[in-house]
Image 1 (cartoon, rainbow over the protein chains, first blue to last red):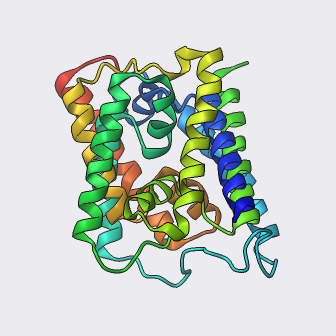
Image 2 (cartoon, rainbow over the protein chains, first blue to last red):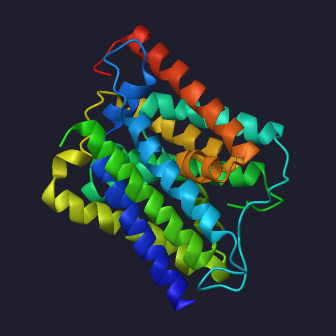
Length: 144
Length: 141
């Protein structure tokens, strides 16, 4: 339990440094990628090109183990779960919010460190939206 | 260092963080899920979720002390638009079971069909929305 909490902290810490180095805590860079009519910024593509291969390889090395280091079982989303309406509708709504603001949950939460009003308002409203989403979908709990 | 190289390096660190979470705790690093899971105030998994979020803010804080300009929002988007955006991001990530980290990084790496579909949809919706907003209202980005 303590080890799980400690790793969660370290994971969050490294993740935030990755986001900051990658430029992802600057909404103007996200919007510069999503907006095809302006001065296009390919940064987000390079972030994905950095993150996915690393995790792609580690996932294949790790998943052969019987259990994770600090827990007795895996907690991964079910592999045979279907693509359903909620997944597609939710992704659509998220994408619109992302395209309006340039913030997704990770960079927004990390940027709370700057104590700037913009991101604080974004996170407050995001939290409200999450409560609303949990209320609408009350029932089966999320797997991730 | 060239900004693209910085993005590649930062992205690799994100991949390392997700791998650490996987091998140590056996979990996907989906930030919307980790954070929204706190809102249920479930004692069993509250502490590691909170520790992740505190770690995320702490890591950013250390970086902010060195380079505060990395955390400035220079998009020029009005605060009302950010507020609506926040509401949609929160609602959408809960209904759609994930965001850029859970679906985009972890899900694609695991070749999850749901994550690949979700990522294509939110990317497309983000492109259409951001491009529409820029063409309609102008602005910096």
